[in-house]
Length: 467
Image (cartoon, rainbow, N blue to C red):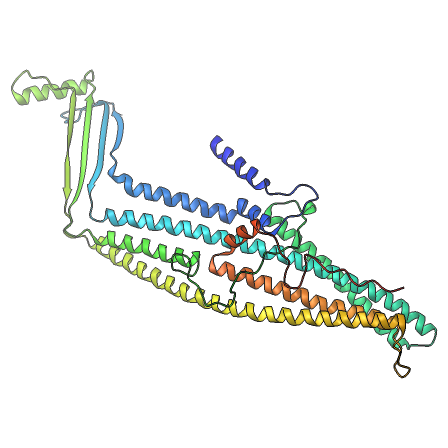
């Protein structure tokens, strides 16, 4: 118990070592590290690995002599070849079993499967944490942008109210502006709720108190060659989950081989026993009299007795074990076919994910150019508001047009934020499918963090109204 508490304390200290100081911000890699230290799914998979280690030891330890000691105190009546004993020592171990070598290899394959399953669970937890992290990033950026739009809508309503009072615009224009204002206020409220929900989920995943949780807006650089074909990089398999499935199938195959090797194969065991009889008991005295009478001499019955030898068993007919062997073989074949199907599905998923990333990158480029175009139009409008259009036949620009242009530019920016978020999601999901997510995050933690393709470590400042 004390050792368990010490290990838990060490794990907690290691987890807390990556928590930033008060007022600091948590990076993506730090958030994933925190989640991996204490997530119950990871701890459960680690317990499975410990169990598999014990099963490997169990399969080897049948060759190690077992020793047991005990006593058999009491009285017997009449003839008894086994008088009470002060103590008894029994020992035995397996010498030869043709199926045991297969059972040992089955246990080792099971350990390999458990270790690969642990790697897959870590990838799952890393994916959940990374997706929660970038969702919080995304919704924070949206909340800021929608808040800016709401501010522009407030100013637009004020301008239109003045123009309606002056007879320059109709009440319909004012009502439309108020509708936009209300919609943006509702949107800002929803975005704030989304941010709170995302922060709560991430806080639960990484074990950081909700009020003190603060994240940065950096994101590791995109992996190279996202459009390459599907890969099989984990021991020749698509990802750790598929590799674990094949390792588990191999464990069942070796188990089936062991179950099948029993007909007409000798099984050899060593046995040994030592008894120290209770010479002071009446039962021993009666047994000694019977021994002397049967032997026809005054030879005393020894207080010590022992035996050792080899026990050889050759199974000739055992229908139950034959049926069990067929069951094990069918189970192994089923597991292998399931693993093959998992490999096919995983490689197909990787192929689709890579092409999806290529499409999302182009969508992000389109959204970025549209936002740049809206910003350039806004810049031109600001110049026209200051200096006039210079063309007497052109309708002069007004502050109302400026606020509408600002709202439109922020709308285009929201499209950039959404496109970047979708690309990041797809990247994380692809890395999860290939089993490379945790390694990529670790490598990114030591590299210089970079911004996304369109977002430069946060939301660009909104254009300030001209006086």
